[in-house]
Image (cartoon, rainbow, N blue to C red; front, side, top):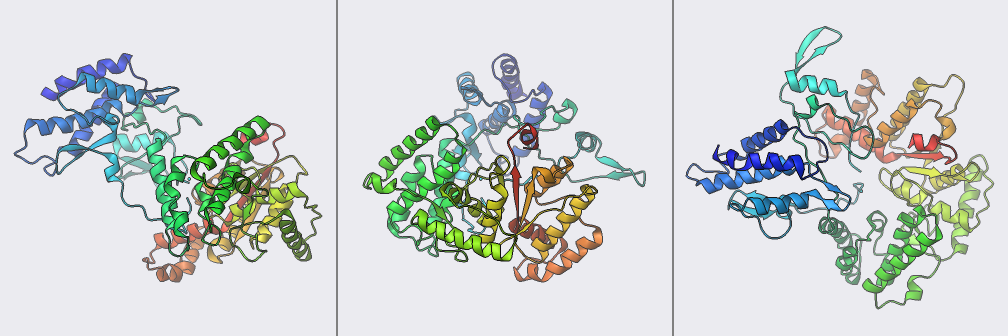
Length: 533
């Protein structure tokens, strides 16, 4: 109670007038969070029975900092977490934090009862080359009222049997984006949650993430990189301009010398940033930034060689059927490869009369998209869980170029056959067939959708579920689910995992997300695209 009287009134008073929160939080919620944190922290493991009062106070201060400051965030040029930290250290001086950073940058080491930087908690990172990178898992959101009912009373009612169902041993973790959708939360629900504002990682964190990813890739003995390439990593990531997904396609064959790495990096930045830019002044600014980084990191290289055109890396630089990520040598070479691919495609499918002028060739290697990154169509299809949104007016070649890129990647293209009777039930049936093909038969497929294929906005809900988590509710009947589980059981067992129902289903869904590529071809004309996005 001494500590409560010492800290709480001052904190509550200053929160009313000085600092801005991400969302409104009632005073009682701050106090509940403080008590809950203390309940977690004040354990015999952390505080032995012979501990002095200063040990109790350091844990109380840690809990209070987060209970009262967790919802602070950066608004424009003002970082309220930094401001809160400065105020706290000036107001309360009994427990001193380390001089660097903010009060939020440290946790209590239970062995020493001292503040230690959170970076000490970061475990060693091991890169899995087959795991996709920059997408978080999330599913559909259930009505808030049902969540609140369970959190208030610990039960729900079965609407079919009209019986009470007690739900025990469940905790909730909720994630919300304050800049998108509706951010209105009923206070009766919010009061149950300890609220944390999660800011964008700072430069130090980003450098650590990027350095770890690229360093393990460049030092992977299977990739056979020369040592002079791997030594460039640290300087490269410090410039905060690293684009990793494309560089992780590279091997020792791709990057034989620093010149190759510089050109690959230029290609990646052009695909990720340049393809989003429309005005010449913005493209000129990007070119200047690229030049500045090249001069700083690769000062020994000839700028003319680094900037030489064309500078395009793709998976078919040595021909279709030889998927190695390499640079193309000239537009003549790539024209020959694509022309051969087009002729082969036309022999096997309905003919496409494409004129592969330079702009069209560049579009096969890159088209604007917003679901992943502006990478090439072909590279997107080679990426784990790579999906593309191609934006262009009618007749610009979106579908034709997507079909050609899919053919180069060895993927079949599926499009729905839209009829007057085609509705949500038929769409779900087509999706279930694609799931079986991709998940049970392990066949790569591109699902190509245009504006015209979406007569009902509910189609987009299913597409969103597919892209977000791979799980589309009630896509299969119970007997179909059991059949799927049985069909993949031996494969799950061969991976060393227990072949239980949950692992089998997750194996099936993961394979669907790996094999089924979504390509949306939409027109920017009108307001439909903005609504669909």
